[in-house]
Length: 289
Image 1 (cartoon, rainbow, N blue to C red):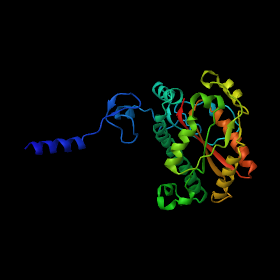
Image 2: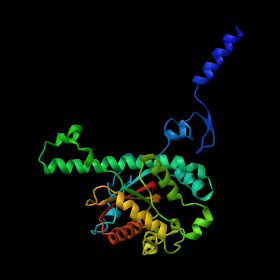
Image 3: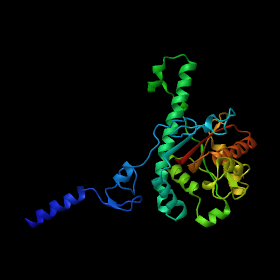
Image 4: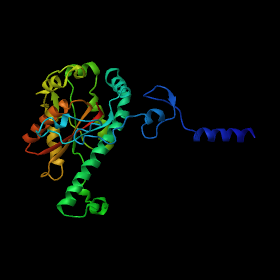
């Protein structure tokens, strides 16, 4: 009888949900099925940006920035995974400033949500354009057999926003590069350090919009390292259909005014032009303020 009781107790323990120490709240709780390392309570409280109000920059609230100028932006669209709430600010601070590098896989998985959202939006726009150009009924966009897989959007390259040498020494890692590593592994998209930061711009969180924009002018340039240049040439030789624009994703942790992303995009455009290639540039950030 005791053996049977022990057996039943063992089965119940196997079927019962495991308890983990959550990476966000540091309490013991049931693990999330989709985001390893956090509890179900914290997963339920993540401020996902599911329906951005601005389709250009991905902002979840009213956005005056994208309508301030009639000039075309160097990036087509940005998407961010979460709103930059106090809880998300604390989480990012622990990752960037307190050396909690084990948070990188979690933040990278969250960033993947933004990639999926961006892909769905671009595919929808491209398919709608195809429907309109061929004068097909609008409902044809919903019929999957009409969609040619070759027409579905995919990124060719991930480019992390670089940090200055002093910031790299201070933190020991580039947070954007770590996020790009996770996304690269999930999606099979290569990443290359195309850019270097030409000068240290100081902490941006305490600066006004105008100060950030001024700081970021000429803040990035092409990485002149010979090994990186060789990797670029090798990557370009492997890109299918060399006549089409390259689809490049700039990766960063947070989008505030977009000045950093735009400066990086302008530098990437120059690099692509030097290789006589057109490029369409997008960005993904973990959070949107």
